Length: 272
Length: 334
Image 1: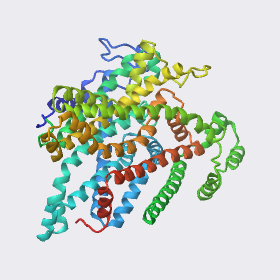
Image 2: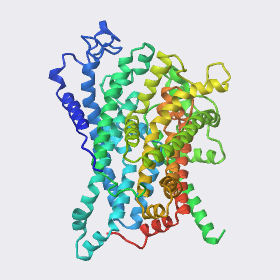
Image 3: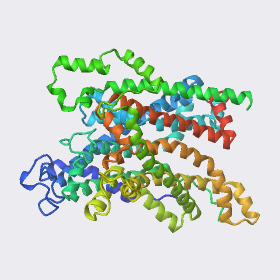
């Protein structure tokens, strides 16, 4: 079966991106302004999505926060994808010894608890802001993908068409750009989109636990860091609304990624 | 056991020990990179009232003044004898602190692990059996949505619904305060965190089982078995499932540290006293000794499970061993 293009996901995602980018002239309220007369107010006419416990308007925070969450996601995914492709393809092409060293190293970093890695890396950068957090998330998330890229490069390197290209006198870079890169591209693209998704989750989870962006830098994660107190005051909108936007964005990204991976099963089932 | 097996075993054990040692160096250095002050973990707010000399004395007493390398060697010497020092925050032997947490985490993560893989196998088989029909598509869609919900938000939602609004289930801890932790009490505290752990991971693995089975279903031996007159169901359960078993088992091995070590978000939200919560606290408040042991425990688990996955694969499918040899040796690529 051929996969349908996820139109709704793409449209939703575009809408969130555009509204996030264009929010400053459109919003009537400053997301950082603390309207102390209206704390913990339920969604209504004036505050469409309600206010949080500091009296900030959640509706405008959503768009400003989305901008930051998506920025962190894309930046971090860019960093980790580049690192993963670099390490993976070098490891897959290089001699057995370099390959062994690189993969040992990757596995070693993979076995350090992610939380510790994140906390100490963040400590090196000092106080967390959008860019340092992106770098930290990017630097801690490339290992799994590097292993996959390596495996694919090795498998591609062993195929007959690469052998044929080499026998016909194709040089290293010719084989690399004409045969390896095009075949690697779809799966790398899929993994890159999944990394955007993972990075957005990582930002949200870290900020939520107080290890990422501080409360005054509005992102979907830092908005949710107020959630535990909101539980006690029954302010459901502080918890539910940012989370719905977060989950929706992740879902759209997943659908897009799955589409890019292409349909794996082209043959018909023998079972039926 | 032949000589070759013995050499291989010694080789594997050696690699394992070296990995653990390197890991300990790495964790030791990383934990000390953080600029926070471990004295805070030990004395709390009182640090601010201490004079500089008193602070230096306290550091000296905790062995934090020496150069990093000396500190590491000292730690290693004690660790080899089974002495991991005291936790700065809890002021007791690290082993006791860990022992208390490990039971809770094993209960949460272990139960979650069993549930996840039992359900993943079931869902994977079901979806593969009904491939591309309505049931498969509905399950896939629901699965994709659940896999997109971040664990911490799911925890918050469940807390909001089941303990704040409905007031059915307790919101934090592993057992009621003061109560001895009777079975129904513990179960009640476990329901919400366990659901989050299971829901958070389930579809990822179920989807992999499904896709692996769909590959298997397209093999030629399936056609042969069908032509011999076996029912489709029997072929799926008896033949395809067996073919998918190696990947299922190695997936389980790789998933184990992931699921056990990944409970820290859930444990923190639910204030569930397990290893994950200890890891979070010790990393955040520079409780060095505790952090070392927690990190080494989870790291060792990762290394062990990766090794197991490889060995299981080689055992079940002898071609794997050959392939990994050839990938590193004589058959060269590029």
